[in-house]
Image 1 (cartoon, rainbow, N blue to C red):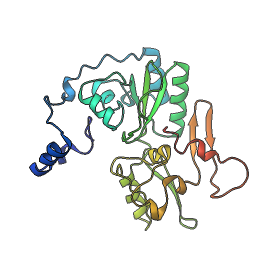
Image 2 (image 1 turned 45 degrees about the vertical axis):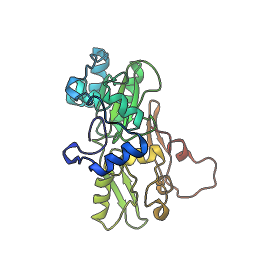
Image 3 (image 1 turned 90 degrees about the vertical axis):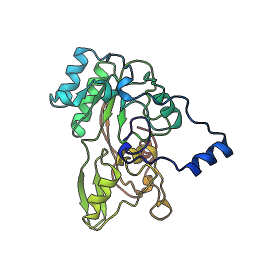
Image 4 (image 1 turned 120 degrees about the horizontal axis):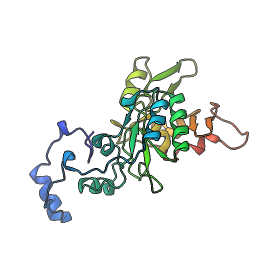
Length: 259
């Protein structure tokens, strides 16, 4: 995805003159005086991640040094989301919310280990799926160093129960990939928000997502039967009963939580 906008830059199409003319005449939109800064010209401060914290994070992901990234481009691409304020700040070269590192776990146990390492070294962790948040969900809620927890490696269909017609999906699975995996068995997720091309299953849950087909299939939270949540204290399994009158529904602690 474009680092400072939406979509694939290789497939970008300029607006027709008729449209740009309407924007100028009806809304007073003027052309930019200067082009956005290219990614390679953005001055990114050196990562504040200390060596001990880096070693702990590498140990958490099975000593895969390549999955603890502190290079400038990786950190920029995990800075903020896709709201208008986010994009305007990125295009101006504002990198004040840049993570100290990007960590790519490959499974629930590694997420637990990364959370434990973060807690030990005083690092906040911000989950990162498709990067399409428009409500500030990818910005840290405090000052200080933080780590972007990129879930792209957790992109599998773990189970499909064709009797009950339920699927177990990992959180980093992007929507088109989830749809393709289910389609092989004759099923659909039935969830098509405007961020569909890049958004992930975990992001759908964290944002209580609703999309163009939700009038027929329901909002995403209405499809969720159970969730497994990694926390610094261990695993929280909310169960998978579709309906229950026995006390509070723990799924609601996670659905719409913005990560």
